[in-house]
Amino acid sequence: MNKRLLAALFGSTLALSPLAMAADLSALESAARKEGQVNSVGMPDSWANWKGTWDDLARLYGLKHVDTDMSSAQEIAKFDAEKDNASADIGDVGAAFGPDRQGQGRDPAVHPSTFDQVPDWAKDKDGHWMLAYTGTIAFIINKDLVKGDDVPKSWHDLEKGKYKVAIGDVSTAAQAANGVLAAAMAYKGDESNLVTGAGAVHQAGRARPAVVGQPDHPDAGKG
Image 1: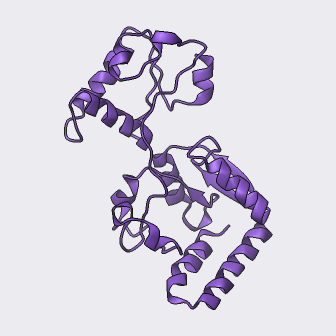
Image 2: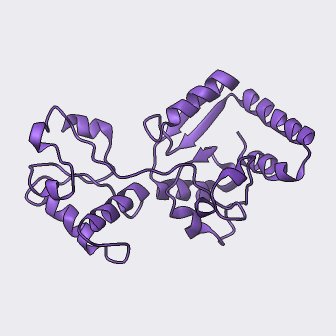
Image 3: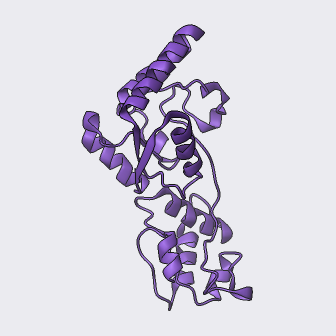
């Protein structure tokens, strides 16, 4: 599915009459059905209930879906490198990456039909970025290995148990960076004092095997 076409169609809807908007959306649907597939990066079934979206696209429009899981930084590097010859249609990146890229002239302003429904704090007023959803940091554990009172309920609990701790690469993944921020706040730190968060993660993994790279379900399953 051509991203330039998507941007052009959605970006023009605000200036069109309802009939013209319907015609443009019809053209987009026809083009999508003809191509028959959506290729995404960083949007696997297990993330943010994207599976529900892909299932709806398959049910309503007959579109297959293929995803290559990547971190936010990897996605952006891929789109920047491929430019108009992009092999992916869409990617999902952390909230901090939108404002950071604004003004670089790389991302077009887009106003989807639901733009006015997005609160001001969750979008750029010109449409260069917007949030699709928000979430919170949580622990994923292997219940076959961590049971009863050993199940951690706070960052402080991680200091007490014999856990393998994986938080991810903070230089490439928004989830990992937010994990460190969450740890910092648990230890009375904040955005300007992340040392306490990094120290908490280090303390949790001290004298126990460290897990590097992105945490995922298969690794948790293997212990």
